[in-house]
Structure formats: structure tokens, C-alpha cells
Length: 89
Image (cartoon, rainbow, N blue to C red; front, side, top):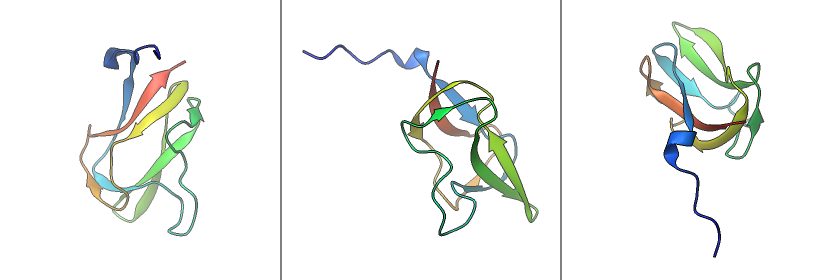
């Protein structure tokens, strides 16, 4: 049988640093910054949050692999809302 998945406590959350609108890609017809399985570094841009007409690039701020996308593209997010789950490396 396959090994059991690691416990959820091994995962970290990338949370929204502001209130705004969550975008997974730099433009509507562009590829998302990251997908499930993407390896990220602290400098990797994972999404954009638009606040008051300003596009803010949000960085992973850690090394790891994206395991889940928690926010919906084009939808509002709150301060501290989880955006992604990441398994640290």
C-alpha cells in the first residue's frame, strides 16, 4: 500500500497580507503564477492582490511546494485569509 500522507501539521499557509482582490495570474489570459505542485522560494511571486487599484505582488516568503490553492481567482480576500497551502522544504 502507498505510504500515508504526511500529517497536515507539516503544511504551512501563505496568508493574505491585506484586504483586496485575489488574482492567480498577472493578466486574465496569462498562466497562473503557481499551481499545485509548484516549487517556490521566498522570492517566488504566488499571486497578486489588488487593493485600491494597486497590484501588489505576494511572495511565498518560504521554500516549499504548493499543495493547495485556497482562494478563488478574482474574488475578494480578507487580511490574514489563507491563500495557499505549502509543504516546506
